[in-house]
Image 1 (cartoon, rainbow, N blue to C red):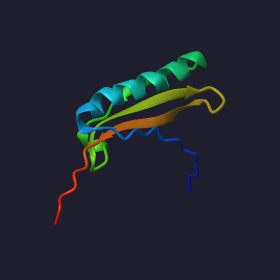
Image 2: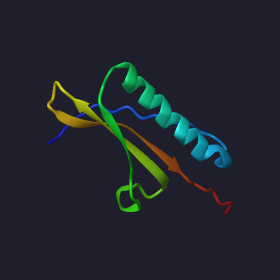
Image 3: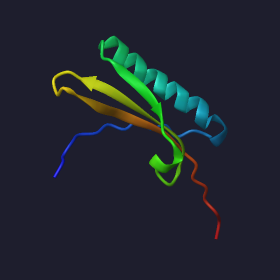
Length: 86
């Protein structure tokens, strides 16, 4: 069994601003990591690694020296969810 704590970054915006806001979220997460002096990389996931509702997802992988391993920072997905009247 594997247990971990996780933090998600979420913004609810109009669809036409989704990708722009996603880039801002990634930039904000990168700024935090830079200020902390942590080594990281941003990975754009392929469709096979994304959730069903995601249109575009970044993972941020951070080197955690205390663990001697790479750890994932909050994912930054763009979800395209439509509601149909029915």
